Amino acid sequence: MVEILAALFLLAGAAVALVAAIGVARLPDTFLRMHASTKAGTVGSGLVLIGAALAFGEVGAWLRAVAILAFLLATTPVAASALGRAAYVGGTPLWKGTVADQLAGVLPRGAFDLAEAERRRRALQPEAEEAAGGTTGGGSRDGAAR
Amino acid sequence: MTPAIRSEPWNPVAWLGLGLLFLRELALSAWDVILTTLRPRLDIRPAILALPLDLRSDVGITLLADLITLTPGTTALHVSEDRRTLYLHCINAASPEAVVSGLKTGFEAAVRRVLP
Image (cartoon, rainbow over all chains, first blue to last red; front, top):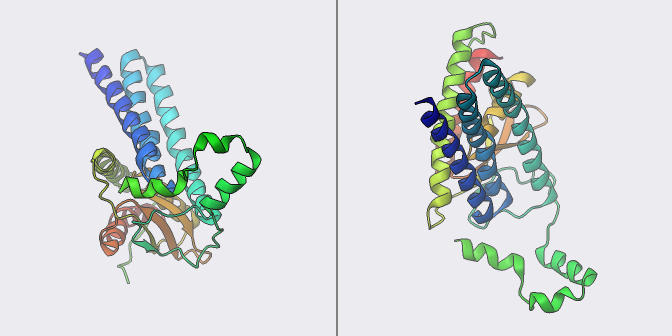
């Protein structure tokens, strides 16, 4: 009975991590992708840890699972928030479907030019130009996702 | 503008209420983000919103920002220098006012019951 419950928790956690990975691959901008990855960090690892503690069943395993969860809950949001703020200040483009940016004018925002980045990359690696076949990698993604 | 709430850092019931609210929000919003991710058509209206703060202490604002970031679908990005506004990115803000008032009456009110 406990084995089945533990297996269900482990499977659910793995499924959440899989969906989060799909989200990271599929969602169109940095901030949206981060929503998918925070879900893996909290819900996914939480379910897997509870499943592991159930499977072992000892007090020590539960203590360890709770301690790991406590550290994850204390540290992941700080990292996510710092990453998001750095991405914004660095000028990472917001997806074109974004309806409001009330942070505009509050924080300085750098310029992040995909075409310029691509040109610099090609200048560094001239042989990669033929392999890429002249397609622009960054610009077409946004249109395809909608 | 919002009614005064007395903060009681030593009240275990208030902390328990905050914990239960967090678990409920975590489950609801995780499910929401999972559905959003798997839906063939990407039907989202992301936005960066400003949340006016009634919390005054740094530790209270930190706890609120942590809870907002831990919940899938919202990420705290910045707190203004005067500690009056918290900026967050929201995955689906079809109605920005509803998102902000939901956070104020939900998470912020619960945090204000434990920290100033």
